[in-house]
Image (cartoon, rainbow, N blue to C red; front, side, top):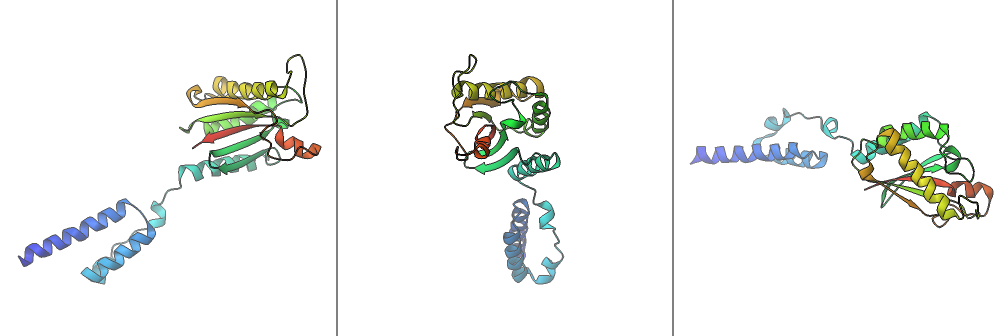
Length: 206
């Protein structure tokens, strides 16, 4: 019975250690190690070495943010591209000066380079992507765009279509919407602040 009890106790300790290793948590690991040390003696625990920090991998969300941030920094896109994390997910705000001529929705050549670089990061992730068009509150009334609604939707559509047709983004994951001037991120009271509202947002949904 004594031998059997020793065996059961050792097996219990083994399974506790295995469970702890399979669910890496630095605090839990330390607490369990201390508890087992008090039961089996510190010498038996002292030789169990583990580099906990090396086994803790970066979360997919943080890795994505890090990749996008480095891309924006490396190509000096900071004035025209900003990242925002909120309850919906990760939003890439792309100001219209980097994508479209004023009052138009045709992608220029420079914008295709920008979208190509962004697509290299986002096309491999499994998340759905919503592409949103926005304008400032300056009225527009042309034969092609009788309102800001038309312009914002067309800009979102052309951006989405380019990413799907030219960059291989899965169309099953893409949706588009146009908000016109009704979702501003800055006041529309000066020319400088209006530029922040003329944008296309790539929203990587949770």
